[in-house]
Image (tube, rainbow, N blue to C red; front, side):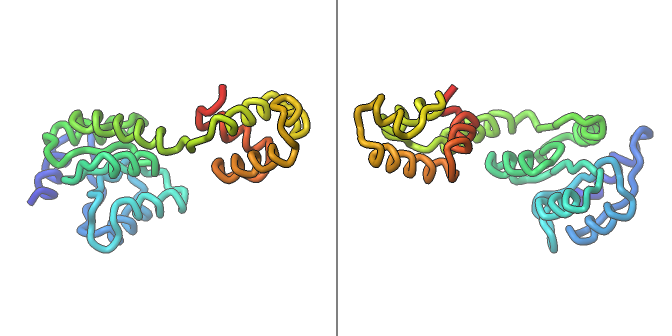
Length: 198
């Protein structure tokens, strides 16, 4: 019923061409692969393959179709993951038919489209994930990291902080583990990426 209403709305718009309709994720993926539409309007929850898996398959196969999700589930984590995964936008099923048609056009132009009620949740999710991405460093580890970023070696840092080189190497080992890296250059780069150092 809902899908039929959207189909009619798209068919009534002279500037839009409907090239296919599918009832599940696998059928949608096959149709997209065959006709390569500019935009695919997909439900995030579908039988067979869900919308996220269809999106990943399109990206894996380097298909140019932009994916616009339409869902009754407006969970901020779901919206974040859809956009991070490469979706062109995320609309609530409460959206008006005209809003959906306009969103398809905007997605085709390369814009990112969100239903108005989803922005605050998405912004909160971005802030939450930014905080979660920053490992908790001890004050000493922060000192070691700052000196490391200045290009100092372990013996140099040991002299600066009046500690043994062995102790500094232990701190470096903890830093590498927390940052998920294996050497000093990668540690500095990752710390900068995460906003731990300027």
